[in-house]
Amino acid sequence: TYESLLAKNKKYLWNPFTQMKEYLKEDPIIIERGQGVKLIDVNGREYYDGNASVWLNPHGHNHPYLNQAIEIQLQKIAHSTLLGMSNVPAILLAEKLVQLSPKNLQKVFFSDSGAEAVEIALKMAYLYWRHRNRPEKNTFISMKNAYHGDTVGAVSVGGMDLFHASFERMLFKSEKVPYPYPYRFAGTAEACKQESIQALEEKLKSSADQIAGLIVEPMVQGAGGMIMMPPGYLTEVARLCRQYEVLLIVDEVATGFGRTGKMFACEHENIQPDLLTVGKKLTGGYLPVAATITTDEIYEAFYGDFAEVKTFFHGHSYTGNQLGCAVALANFELYEQEDLISKVQERSLQLADLLMPFQELSHVGEVRQLGLMVGIELVKDKQTKATYAYEEAIGATVCKRARELGLFTRPLDHVITFMPPLVVTQTELHDMTTILYQAIVDVTE
Ligand code: LLP
Image 1 (cartoon, rainbow, N blue to C red):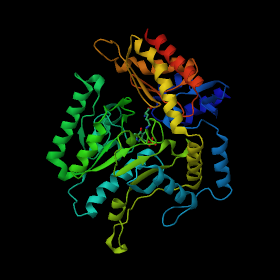
Image 2: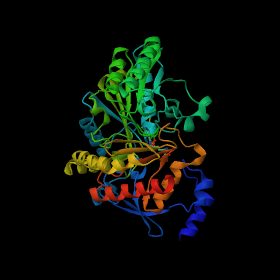
Image 3: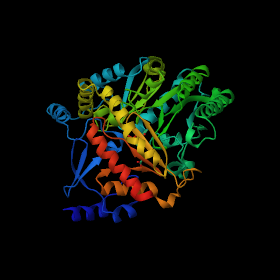
Image 4: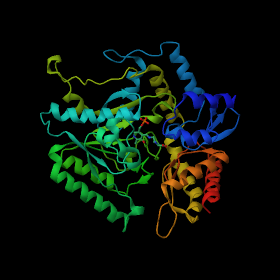
């Protein structure tokens, strides 16, 4: 029963990104099943999955085709190592990922989470310059307010003070540059973009000799508050990286596989990164598989005789897991069969209409959307753009109200996120946004 599970949750389980003292007071949801875009708890209550289970579910829950892919693979083998040998679904998935990603990217390195995919990209970039006899290129540029995961390397290139500041002494040093945030810039979006580009160029001018790579969340800074880049910014970043011989790492863990209306967010500006990280939707939201995708040039830098000691000494026990790779292959078959990316584009337009009325609310500062990736920034005062104090927990309160009304999502401080599964129908979108609207009105008006 719910009560006994809750007691065991309290006794044994420490939930991630969760203040346990608050959580246990608030009758937490304990999920038992999922169906389509809904989650169903042990009491039989249904909730719309308004953040696609932390941004990873494209086709809905309990999908027969994905279930079947796992069952079929399970009859053969669940897991064998990819260290020094190979397996069928991992090879086929690597091929698929190369076909899907920007055309300069040719090699796939698997891992188990987005944070690991980022760690791997950083280590590859660092070692690339060592193997090229330029070991002094050993630091990274990252964006202020960035989020690349919670492991120590990923936190080192992160920039969200709330999550990251307290770890400062554990982290390696990296150079931070401003990320353009037009809503909070005194001036036009174009001027905001120019200022950020200028700061980046100055940094590169003074220190490109020491920089191995630059890492960025393409088009949208996700956990930092769903902040969309002004058009042209990413193109400029890519151009400067090229000009100053700095490897460009794009972290598509959140944006990849159709979330923003393109297969990869990079495609909005047709840029060609040197390293690209993916995770989350890769397995249709089923199993933890992530990947770092890179160029032949980087791969070649590690390619040599045993005695040269250029082996990439990195790998996790479950890397290339067959069940995960098999369901990932089935996931991409569904993308093709259902022409999912076109559907997302159509649905995004409908969502834009549904979000219009939100702008009129007296505590909605800005509604930001790219594809099916949405952030609604709440402000205490619309004129001055003054934010609510952290202690007011405005985002958490709105999400709590949404939950009572039948939709689950999470706040990023005072920004409400909305990231439905990509297969969401127009009717479901309508229902979900109605709940969100009501929750914001109930809490802030
Ligand atoms: N990179 C990006 C751009 C991400 O958005 C994420 C996770 C990662 C890497 C790490 O992937 P992972 O290791 O989790 O597979 N903490 C927030 C939400 C974080 C969003 C997840 N993004 C929250 O409290 O809701």
